[in-house]
Image (cartoon, rainbow, N blue to C red; front, top):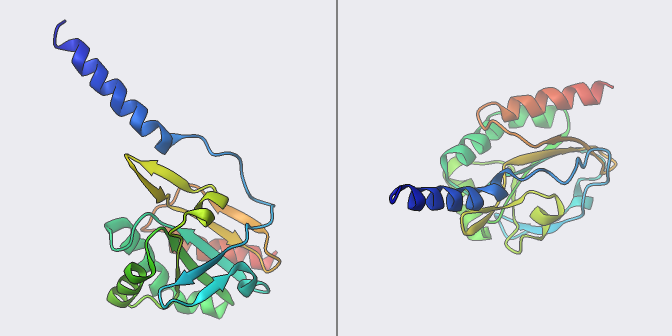
Amino acid sequence: MHKTIPRLLLAFTVLLLALPLFAAEKGSMEGKAAPEFKLQDQNGDWHALEDYRGQWLALYFYPKDDTPGCTTEACNFRDNIYAYKAIGAAIVGVSLDDVESHAEFASKYKLPFTILSDTDKSVSKAYNVLRNYMLVKIASRQSFLINPEGVIVKHYAKVDPEKHSEEVLHDLKQLMAE
């Protein structure tokens, strides 16, 4: 009994710390106007949502540059870049990392698409992807397909980094055919 109470307290504390990671979404953003953004990319250039009006946009959020899952996801988007370009779709990644980190990440893996730096967390909040991971805030791995009119037509709340680029490409082709 003496050892059980501290173990229960520890388990309860860990559960409380992990709860924000599994919190329910505030509701789907599908069918709503995509929140505006204006952020710097890996080269220090500014990008806004309005820059992508008139074309399809795959906007993907990820936790951290140069980590295993994030690298896999980014490299899969890289490997499919010509298929995205062939259908006129843009790929834009977003994380809380700074411009310098993005520049190193893009250079190391030869990423041919825009990666935006959301250091003030405003865009991650607007898209409801900001999460607490222990004592650190991250952009959770989620993606949005935004149509040429700026409306979110698909939200991926659960993403498998290994398969996500193919899934998005498939869905884009289907949506464009409608």
